[in-house]
Each structure stands twice: as structure tokens, then as C-alpha cells.
Image (cartoon, rainbow, N blue to C red; front, top):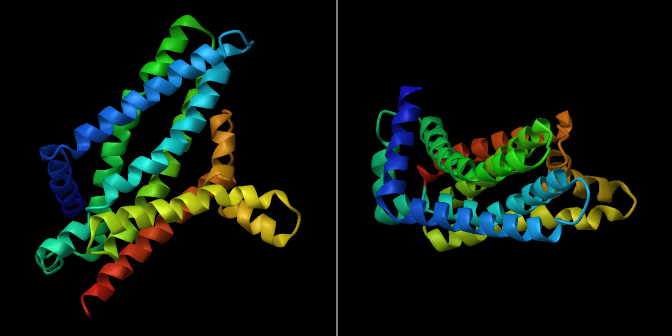
Length: 241
């Protein structure tokens, strides 16, 4: 565990000594605040105001995270490959799995900081409206789980590239496909069921409504574990190239 935390602290340091962390946190907070204001204005005349605002906000936040997570993960391995420091890292007395988990934990820590900044919105609603605490819990749990999938997939794409832009675009493309594939699941048949199960958006819908479904939690955790495992294997295979 100490080795994982050592890698994590090193990556967090590189995040915050560069403008990336501050820029991402600022833009994400500003965009979330803008969406919150717009949703609040558009739903101000409807009944059940508090729940409607947060349900819509959680859905929109999950979507905009699709654009931000590739920025967090694009440099994790791609930059090290380009600069040549990946050899030093992989030959150090630390396993590949520790390296992958440390980098994953660093990205998740930064993402949790981003989400923490948005707690102001449900707090404002709690002061001026009525809302189910369970909706807040399930909404943020869903955001954390879906972001975990985004980050693990971005980590995998970064491990297979030497260019940060290529890594970011690759991860964004795959995430976007797995997001919109649920649209194709409206038809009948086994293929539609498979597409529905693969869709990030379909699994997140219940979380934004305040409902935690076990199969959705299992899907997100399984997807994260598969991507992290694939990343470890990708790093291992690079040693033989």
C-alpha cells in the first residue's frame, strides 16, 4: 500500500505543480454552476423543484465528465513514454500493478476534489427547498462510479500511446461510443440487450433518480477492474517491445 501511495502522491504533485489541475477544477466548477443556474431557472415554476433540479444536474454532470476525464488521464503513461522516464519507473523496485493503481488513485483523488466543489449546489437546495438526502447520495455515488470507469479506460488508452493528444482523443472516442450506444438499444432483440448493458448512460439513469441498483454498481466496478487489469498487461507487454 505504501508503494501505491508513493506513486499516487508523485502524480498528485505533478498535477498541482502544473496548471492542469487548477484549470480543470475551475472550468468544471464554472460549467457545473452555469448548468445549475440554467436548470434552476427553467424549473422554477414546476412542482417538486428540488428533486427535478438535482436529477437534471446529476445527469448533465455525468455527461460533462465524459469530456474532462480524458484530460486527467492522457499524460499518465503517454508523457512518460515520450520523455523516456517510463523505463526508470518500470525498472524501479515496484510492481506494474502498484504503478497502475497509484496513477489511478491520483486521478480519482483529483476527480473527487472536483466533485466536492459541486456540493455547494445540493447544500443551497437543502437550505431553500426540500430534498431527499438519498438522492444526493445516490447521485454522487453514481458520478464516482461512472468517473471510475472513465478514468480506468483513459489510463488504458494512455498506456498504449506515446502522445497525450492521441491518448485523450482515443479515450474520449471510446467513452462517447459507450455512452451513446444505449440509443441503439431501443429496438428488440438480444443485440439490443447487449448494447443496453454496455451503455454507460443506461446504467447511470437510476442513480440520478435516487435509486441504487446492484447490477449497475457491479457493471461499473467490473468495467473498472477489467480496464485496470488490461492496463497492467499493456505495461507488462511494453517491456518486451
